[in-house]
Each structure stands twice: as C-alpha cells, then as structure tokens.
Length: 259
Ligand SMILES: Cc1cc2nc3c(=O)[nH]c(=O)nc-3n(C[C@H](O)[C@H](O)[C@H](O)COP(=O)(O)O)c2cc1C
Image 1 (cartoon, rainbow, N blue to C red):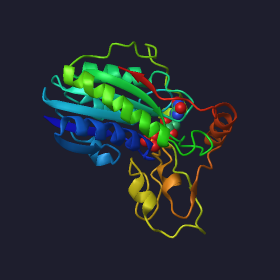
Image 2: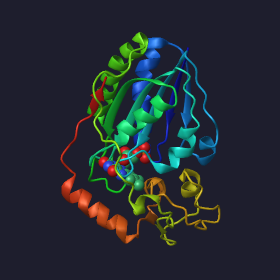
Image 3: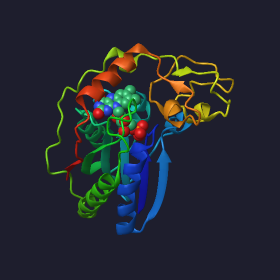
Image 4: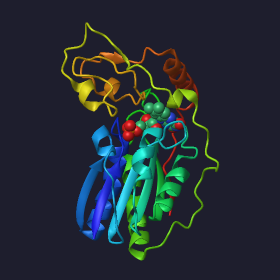
C-alpha cells in the first residue's frame, strides 16, 4: 500500500490542506508515502500511474470556479486502475462553484474510486483581506477531522455517498482565465535579483535575466513570495477583481465535506 499526496499549489495554501489531510491518512495506514508537487512545470510533464493498492490525496486551488486549466494535460494522463482517491479544492473565500465536482468527475473518469471530497478555504491569491491567513488553526483542525472520516471510507473502499455541490456542464472559463498574460510588474528599484520569482513560477514564465515570457497564469506566486515586495499586479483586470472580492467576499466561509 502506498499513499501519494498530489497537489498543485503556487501560493502554498492547497499544499497546507493536502498535508494536513495526508498526515492523518499516514497515521491511520502507516504506509509508504510520496509527495508529488505538480507546481513546477516539469512535474506536470510526467505520467502518474496508480493501482488498487494506492491511496491518493489530490488538491488543487479553484481558478474561476473550476480546476486550473493548466492541469488538464497532466490530469488527462492520470491512470487510477482502482486506486482510492480523496479530492480537495481550495478556494479563496469567494466560491468553489463547480471545481470540486469537476475534480471528482476527472478522478472517477480516470479509474479512481473517489471516497471523499472536501472544499477548504485559503487566502485569496489576489488579496490578504479575503480569507487572510487561511488555512488557519480552525481549518487545519477541520482538515484533520475530514482526514479521519475519509480514512474510514478509504479503508472500507466505499465511494462518496453525499451529493457533491456543483453543476454540469461546468461554469464556463472566462477569457481572462485562459488568456496568457505578462508577469506581474516588477519594481526595478526594489528587486535584488534574488531569483525567487524565477524559481516559484509554475509556468517558467520568468527567465533567469527576468525577461517576461508573456505566458503568466496570474497565480500570484511571484507576488506573494518576493522577499522585497517587488512584484505587483499592475493589470487593471486583477485590480478590479481584487476590489470586488474585498467588497463582497470577506464573510468567513467554512470547509465543506462530502463523504
Ligand atoms: C487565476 C485565479 C482564479 C481564482 N478563482 C477563484 C474562484 O473562482 N473562487 C475563489 O474563491 N477563489 C479563487 N481564486 C483564489 C484561489 O483559489 C485561492 O487563493 C487558493 O487558496 C490558492 O491556492 P494556492 O495557495 O494553493 O495557490 C483564484 C485564484 C487565481 C490565481
């Protein structure tokens, strides 16, 4: 038996939730555990093949109410072969819309037995006033409780019983979600050329000399992880999105379990 923690997480909130759930699964099954971070582009070029003895905890952030489009190629190559899966969506306190349902559908279609699904909140990529600091202690405790319930289902080899929230056909991805963009603007006065933005970019959009490849997915990793605060979204669209989020989406939302 092997446990695999599989996630895409540019700003690390999804990673925290997958790790909390995964830790409980590890404690319950005491099996070999592998962590596969799909955030670096190279990791998404591989094919991931599982079998009946495998348990997979998968997590992705919600982008536009859906699974991030850049995951389609790697997810389309997944082979479940009867592996048991726990699927997680982490969203920025607005809504997860159809993302969790879409994730469960993908995993079912790829031959996994989906035993449990959960929607959790992470600080929004575009504002620390929306879901700021989340996942927090309460979220981690919720993730641990979810892990305990999910472990029972995994052990029994039973699929999700509760109906997942979401609609088919899934919400349409807006043009802003799919169109490649320039990287967040760089303040040359603040930049120390430390290379952090180069290393955290999941699409290798920023070259070593900081040249911009124009294929940014606006995940905000370079903005959040720049030690000098030298990167910011100058893009008008994201400023408008941020303003709307800060106006409408600050009421605390709670994790939801589908077991
Ligand atoms: C392009 C993009 C689209 C997003 N769309 C949504 C959304 O539809 N609903 C929502 O609540 N949060 C949305 N978010 C926020 C992220 O889902 C949230 O911040 C998540 O915790 C980020 O995960 P990460 O830390 O693993 O990168 C979006 C973020 C980005 C970058």
